[in-house]
Length: 497
Image (cartoon, rainbow, N blue to C red):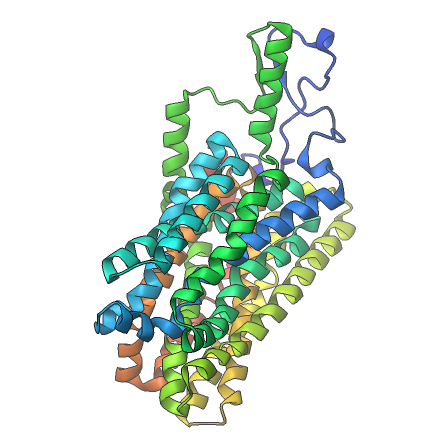
């Protein structure tokens, strides 16, 4: 591998170098660049009170939880929806679930550049309103076309807390503390799609599928009203630009500027931010590799979501309501994985810091990839366990235990990658996460479309074995990145853009 002599950008502090660090207007020279007032500047979101920082994280996690309900809460009720809307197309049944995830793929391509141009808080608030309106539209739909259109809009708007949440946590927390914060956020993004079908199955069976969307609408309406009062802007370039604007107004000096202010026009900034996620995905070996790894397990998760109730209704003759309970296997494994991996990530970072005796920011982002090693092995084990226990018609709890192992392993891949991308690309974390989200959402949307036919052709045992063998091929990924990731990033031109 070629040696690159450039400095590793991820080793730099997330806040820019100190230039102007005083609020004393008399001390501002012309020209001047505005930065934080030292490491303890109370305007820096990382220096806000712990209570207020955790309040932000909890609100973003709740938003993520509610918007993620829409991805799978409908899954057990899809047959009822299709009958109600007058369609019997089998492929369209899977697409009713998948189109929401297509919105998850498309949304970050817009919200990520908008957040870098206008800040994170404004994008959160506008997306909340759009998601709320589209969810109401789903509940009131009278035909399949109308329903699919609102599902696509709700997915595109609902992905915002998922697309920007990692960046917001990076704004608020030092790298050493991100593991636990990511675990809380992960509860919303990955647990609700697992437990939502349980509620969705019973709601559809007892009071009708439309109430699934009214149940989502109620908490979302509350969060939409409260969020403007609870969420402040956290993105450093926007905050520093506001500070520079205030100083220009108070001093009358037009040459005062933010240190992070771009040298380009707003149109050029937006265009660069718009293409950056796709550019990073296609040209950055690190982003491409991790995005593909996450896409594999995420696609498997949605394949499970869209086929699980059908499989258990067919194999074990469960009702619509009871078939929702089978999602508990994956859900429990996911919850255990979230907290175990979050704890392990922080412990690995603390241990590495203690051994090196260096500040948090100097830790290589690859430090957070160590939990991926055992997780990459657990994922195919869980799939084999799940598939062959179904094939042999084992007691229903046995395949659910296999799904629990899979869910644990999935979190061990998903969560370290999120933390890694935020730390490896601190200036453009939203774009890095959007690049990863684009691929995994596309795979999550498209893979389930062929899930039932795959199981029909190969059977539940060999069908899941095929998935396990592909996951097994991804086991070396964390080893390779831990060993060579630093050099790969230093040779990556996208890091400096």
